[in-house]
Length: 135
Image 1 (cartoon, rainbow, N blue to C red):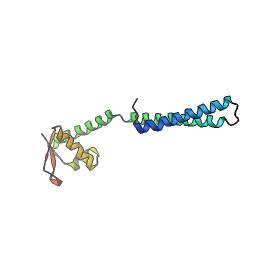
Image 2: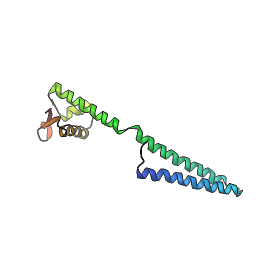
Image 3: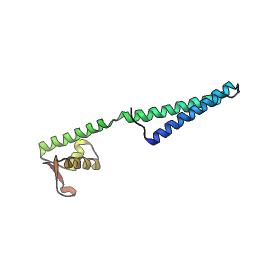
Image 4: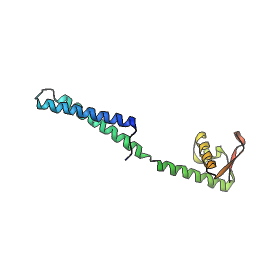
Protein backbone atom coordinates (compact mmCIF):
# COMPACT_ATOMS: atom_id res chain seq x y z
CA UNK A 1 0.00 0.00 0.00
CA UNK A 2 1.36 3.43 -0.96
CA UNK A 3 1.47 6.51 1.25
CA UNK A 4 -0.81 9.37 0.20
CA UNK A 5 0.59 12.82 -0.52
CA UNK A 6 -0.45 15.64 1.80
CA UNK A 7 -3.00 17.00 -0.69
CA UNK A 8 -4.52 13.56 -1.33
CA UNK A 9 -4.68 12.84 2.40
CA UNK A 10 -6.48 16.13 3.11
CA UNK A 11 -9.00 15.66 0.28
CA UNK A 12 -9.90 12.06 1.07
CA UNK A 13 -9.95 12.42 4.85
CA UNK A 14 -11.98 15.64 4.78
CA UNK A 15 -14.67 13.71 2.88
CA UNK A 16 -14.50 10.90 5.43
CA UNK A 17 -14.73 13.29 8.41
CA UNK A 18 -17.54 15.26 6.79
CA UNK A 19 -19.38 11.98 6.14
CA UNK A 20 -18.98 10.90 9.74
CA UNK A 21 -20.28 14.28 10.95
CA UNK A 22 -23.36 14.00 8.73
CA UNK A 23 -23.91 10.43 9.86
CA UNK A 24 -23.71 11.35 13.53
CA UNK A 25 -26.15 14.26 13.00
CA UNK A 26 -28.54 11.92 11.17
CA UNK A 27 -28.33 9.27 13.89
CA UNK A 28 -28.91 11.89 16.59
CA UNK A 29 -31.95 13.23 14.72
CA UNK A 30 -33.31 9.68 14.32
CA UNK A 31 -33.17 9.19 18.08
CA UNK A 32 -34.98 12.49 18.51
CA UNK A 33 -37.70 11.24 16.11
CA UNK A 34 -37.07 14.15 13.80
CA UNK A 35 -39.03 13.80 10.58
CA UNK A 36 -36.26 14.82 8.15
CA UNK A 37 -33.50 12.75 9.79
CA UNK A 38 -32.99 10.76 6.59
CA UNK A 39 -31.45 13.80 4.81
CA UNK A 40 -28.27 13.98 6.94
CA UNK A 41 -28.13 10.17 7.06
CA UNK A 42 -28.07 9.90 3.27
CA UNK A 43 -25.70 12.86 3.01
CA UNK A 44 -23.41 11.28 5.59
CA UNK A 45 -23.35 7.95 3.81
CA UNK A 46 -22.77 9.66 0.48
CA UNK A 47 -19.82 11.78 1.65
CA UNK A 48 -18.31 8.94 3.69
CA UNK A 49 -18.49 6.67 0.64
CA UNK A 50 -16.98 9.45 -1.49
CA UNK A 51 -14.07 9.84 0.92
CA UNK A 52 -13.41 6.12 0.92
CA UNK A 53 -13.54 6.10 -2.89
CA UNK A 54 -11.08 9.01 -3.08
CA UNK A 55 -8.73 7.19 -0.73
CA UNK A 56 -8.96 3.98 -2.77
CA UNK A 57 -8.41 5.84 -6.05
CA UNK A 58 -5.35 7.66 -4.71
CA UNK A 59 -3.84 4.47 -3.30
CA UNK A 60 -4.53 2.23 -6.30
CA UNK A 61 -3.45 4.88 -8.81
CA UNK A 62 -0.02 4.87 -7.18
CA UNK A 63 0.28 1.09 -7.19
CA UNK A 64 -0.56 0.66 -10.87
CA UNK A 65 2.86 1.91 -12.06
CA UNK A 66 5.42 1.07 -9.42
CA UNK A 67 8.85 2.66 -9.73
CA UNK A 68 10.35 -0.78 -10.25
CA UNK A 69 8.56 -1.13 -13.60
CA UNK A 70 9.91 2.27 -14.68
CA UNK A 71 13.44 1.20 -13.74
CA UNK A 72 13.03 -2.06 -15.66
CA UNK A 73 11.81 -0.17 -18.74
CA UNK A 74 14.76 2.22 -18.57
CA UNK A 75 17.14 -0.71 -18.14
CA UNK A 76 15.73 -2.44 -21.24
CA UNK A 77 16.15 0.79 -23.24
CA UNK A 78 19.74 1.05 -22.07
CA UNK A 79 20.33 -2.57 -23.05
CA UNK A 80 18.94 -1.87 -26.53
CA UNK A 81 21.36 1.04 -26.89
CA UNK A 82 24.34 -1.06 -25.78
CA UNK A 83 23.36 -3.87 -28.14
CA UNK A 84 23.00 -1.36 -31.00
CA UNK A 85 26.42 0.11 -30.17
CA UNK A 86 28.05 -3.34 -30.18
CA UNK A 87 26.71 -3.96 -33.69
CA UNK A 88 27.17 -0.48 -35.20
CA UNK A 89 29.95 1.06 -33.07
CA UNK A 90 28.16 4.46 -32.84
CA UNK A 91 24.67 5.79 -32.14
CA UNK A 92 23.13 9.23 -32.57
CA UNK A 93 20.27 10.75 -30.65
CA UNK A 94 17.95 10.28 -33.65
CA UNK A 95 18.88 6.61 -33.95
CA UNK A 96 18.24 6.12 -30.24
CA UNK A 97 14.87 7.86 -30.58
CA UNK A 98 13.83 5.47 -33.36
CA UNK A 99 15.19 2.47 -31.49
CA UNK A 100 13.31 3.21 -28.27
CA UNK A 101 10.34 5.32 -29.50
CA UNK A 102 11.27 8.19 -27.19
CA UNK A 103 11.04 11.94 -27.67
CA UNK A 104 14.19 13.99 -28.23
CA UNK A 105 14.42 15.17 -24.62
CA UNK A 106 13.99 11.68 -23.12
CA UNK A 107 16.47 10.19 -25.57
CA UNK A 108 19.01 12.87 -24.67
CA UNK A 109 18.44 12.24 -20.96
CA UNK A 110 18.88 8.47 -21.39
CA UNK A 111 22.09 8.89 -23.37
CA UNK A 112 23.42 11.33 -20.77
CA UNK A 113 22.66 8.81 -18.02
CA UNK A 114 24.60 6.15 -19.89
CA UNK A 115 27.44 8.62 -20.29
CA UNK A 116 27.36 9.57 -16.60
CA UNK A 117 27.63 5.96 -15.44
CA UNK A 118 30.59 5.45 -17.76
CA UNK A 119 29.14 3.07 -20.34
CA UNK A 120 29.35 5.36 -23.37
CA UNK A 121 31.13 8.55 -24.30
CA UNK A 122 29.95 11.51 -26.35
CA UNK A 123 31.94 12.46 -29.42
CA UNK A 124 31.33 16.06 -30.51
CA UNK A 125 29.93 18.92 -28.50
CA UNK A 126 26.51 19.84 -29.89
CA UNK A 127 24.35 19.56 -32.95
CA UNK A 128 24.27 17.05 -35.80
CA UNK A 129 27.90 16.03 -35.37
CA UNK A 130 27.30 14.46 -31.94
CA UNK A 131 27.33 10.69 -31.64
CA UNK A 132 28.00 8.22 -28.86
CA UNK A 133 30.30 5.22 -28.70
CA UNK A 134 31.12 2.56 -26.13
CA UNK A 135 33.99 3.39 -23.79
